[in-house]
Structure formats: C-alpha cells, structure tokens
Image 1 (cartoon, chains in turn yellow, brown):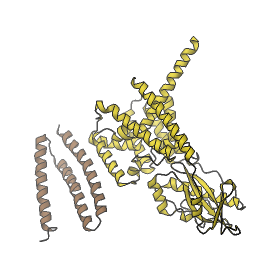
Image 2: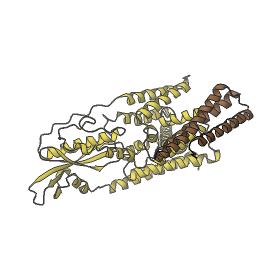
Image 3: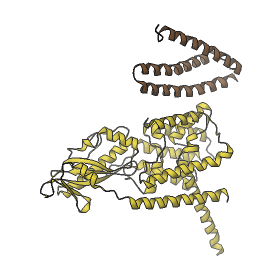
Image 4: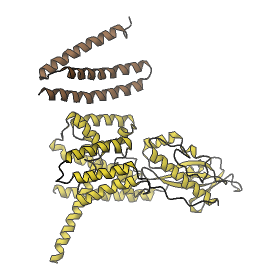
Amino acid sequence: MNNRRTNRVFALGALVLIAVVWIVSAAREQADLMPIVRQTVPGAGHVIRQDGGVFSAWADDTETELLARIAIGTGDGYGGPFQVAVAVDRWGAVIGAAIADEKETPAWMERVLDSGLIWSLIGKSYRDEFRLGLDVDGVTGATCTARALADAAVMGSRAAAENLGLPVEARRPPKIVFGIPEIVLILLFAIGFVGHQSRFPYAKQARWISMITGLVVLGFLYNSPVTLAYITKLVLGYWPQWQTNLYWYFLIGGILFVFTVDNKNPYCDWCCPFGAAQECMGAIGGAKSRTPLRFQRLLIWLQRLLALTAILLGVWFRNPGVASYELFGTLFELLGSSVQFAALGLVLIAALFIKRPWCNYLCPIRPVVDLIRLTRQTVKEQWQKATLRTPAA
Amino acid sequence: MDLTGGPFWFLMGVIFVLVASGFHAFARDRGWVITWWKALLAVIWYAIFSLSFFAWGTLIGENEAAAGLKLFLIGLFVSIVFGVALVRLLAHSSR
C-alpha cells in the first residue's frame, strides 16, 4: 500500500471512529439535573419538575408556600454550552445559582469559581443584565468563561421569572464584538495570503512581521491561538453565538477558506503565536530540523495518534477542553500546573536547537491540517476523474 | 564561625576566579577573540546564573522555598537562553 493510500485509509478510519464515538456519547448524555437544582434552594422541602424544563421549589410537600422557580440558562462557554441553574423568588430576585454543566478548561474554571462570581449573582433582579465588571464581578484572565456564566444566569433568571408570571421584556440581541483581535486576525490572514504568492519578493520579512504580530497580539495580549478545543467544539456541533464569537468564526472559517481556495496553510507557519515563540527561540539558538529520517514517519504517526486520542476523549466526554494538552495558556497567561510549566520549559529550551519541536512532534493542530489537506486533495481528484469521465460517456 | 558571612563570599570569589580563568582558556582553545564587551556580556551571564542560586538560597532562608524554586527555575531558563545566544555570538564573531 503506498503512502497516499495509507493516509487515506487511516484518515477515513479516524473519521469513522470519531463518528461512532460521537453517536455513542450523544446517546448516553442525559444528565440528572435534580441534585444541581436542589443546591440552588437548600431550604426547599419539596422540588418538582414542571413542563418546559422549569422546576418549582416548595417549602414542604403540601405545595402551599412557593420558595422559588428554578430554570436552566445556557451561555456560550469556551468549550461549548455553559449551563447554570438559577432560582428566582416570587418578586423576581435571584436567591440561588449553581453550575449545571460546563465544558471549560479546568484552570480557567477554577479561576472563575475562586472569584466568587456565582455568589455575586445572589440578590440581583431578573431585569438586570449581569454585565461583567458592572452588575457582577469580572474575572481577569477568564473572561470567556465568566461571560458564559453571566449569560447563562441571565437566561435562567428570565425563564424562571417568565414562568412566575412576572413581566419579562424581550432581550436585545447581543452587541457584535468586533475589536482588535478580529482586525489583527484578518490582517494576518491577508499578509499570509500575499506572502504565499510566488512572485512576492518580501515573503521572509512578511512572515516575520506576521509571526511577531501574532505572538504579541494573538498570544500575549489576547491568548487566542487555535487550540484542539476549537476543533472538538466544531466536531461536537457547538456553534457559539456569532455576535460575540466572530473571532472564532474568522479563525476556523479563514483557515478552511484559504485552504480550499489556495491549498496553503495560512495559520501554522505564519501567525500561530506559539509557533512564533518557538521560532524566536530558534533564531537565538540557530535551530535546525533534526528529525532522523528513519524515525520521521513514526513521529508523524505518533503525533496523529496523540491528536486523534485527544479528539476522541473530547467527543466521548462531550467536553472539548477536557483533553486539550496544549501549553499555550501556560506561556501566554502563565496559567497551568507544575507539569505544564516543566513541559513548557522543555519545549522552549528544545526550540533553541530543534526547529519548532512542538509543532513538528506534539501539536494536535498539524494532523488536523493534514486531514484537511488530504480531504481537499481527494475531493479534487475525484472531481477531476468525474469530469473527465463525463464526456466519454 | 559564621559560614554564611565572609567565608561564603571568599568561596564565591575563588569560584569566580576559577570560572573566569576556565572561560579564558576555553575561549583561547576555540579561537574566540574576547573583546571588552564580550567579556562584559559573559560577566553579566555569570551574574544572572549565580544570582538564580543566591535568590533561591535567600528565599529558603526566608521560609519561601516554593517561591525560591520558581525564581531559580526562571533564572535558570533565562541563563540557558542567554547562554546559548552568548556562545553563538562569541563563536560567530571569532570567524
């Protein structure tokens, strides 16, 4: 079996495996919400589920004194839907809240939990917008997770208030978030597109400008590189709200678009901030590609196996963040465990001597990029075969 | 006798002289031309490297061993990066 056929067979096998795990994990995902709901009103003697997914918390079994209505609100988290159970009393005040489901990266989630954000919701009215830093406490370094929690709480409190018969005004659509990261990303893709043209004489300089900008803006300022969680999120079908997640759509859509049109990778070698950090280290140490030829294929397949395992774990647990093993947050936010910091140190020191060690041997994005490239190639070949056959027939 | 006072710094001085003469011999063997600014860079590197250890020891004495270890590791990381750059600079400019 030649190399190309092997790649196609394994790619197909991987896609089938992901599909099977997806179906199995979707079938078993039926969380029992009652224990979470009870946490929101600990003093309730009797809690029942009503139609429409709203719960009622009564003082006792006689159901004469209603303490609160509890509804589950959903926000867009970093790894997917973020659900919060919110208890609202008869006057529309939030009296309890508990996280029902989340798919966040543990380090970020821990930061939000430690901040006490969820406790700052207590006493708010269902009419409040729960704006971070204004109505409720913000959380530095975990804005996406904190915003998801606040949005979920708004949705939950309004649903509960509506069920109580309180007047609920239609919520205004969210403001479109289009700022520096989105503008910079579009510019970087544009630089990459121009730089990839064979007649462009300043490709090397353009690539360094793109890399340094990516390192500073997408890395240190906004910590928004492509991670495996983005890909797993896509596989799981968690499409975030476009108004507040334009960056995500530009990033994934841009990569797929440029690949389809140009067959060039606009991200990894040009604006990935972690790749740029490694290249900077490589420039200091004079790094070279040092993969022994006889291990080259083995290392490529190990990297693919690692990425596939991570995706399968993310799909199995239906939590994109659970198996992400990238060190991006450790470098750009200085957030991570001792093991992650040790691994980051090793990768950066290795990058002094070996060209992009993370990208070449460990990064899960590269196998995904290879899969996109292979799919494009296969579709194109099949298309060409079909168009050649048609006139003869 | 207080070993953390005079004798310690005397020992540090002896080590510094040995390191400096070792570096001089190493540079001569390699054919590196050591100008005053290269020597200054080498001294700065040695200062960062040894300060990482001193900071660690000092923080252990202040009952901040965990912080000391972190500072030491950061210092070591900076020393390695700066050291690699320094060796490349010295080797490159001697040609």
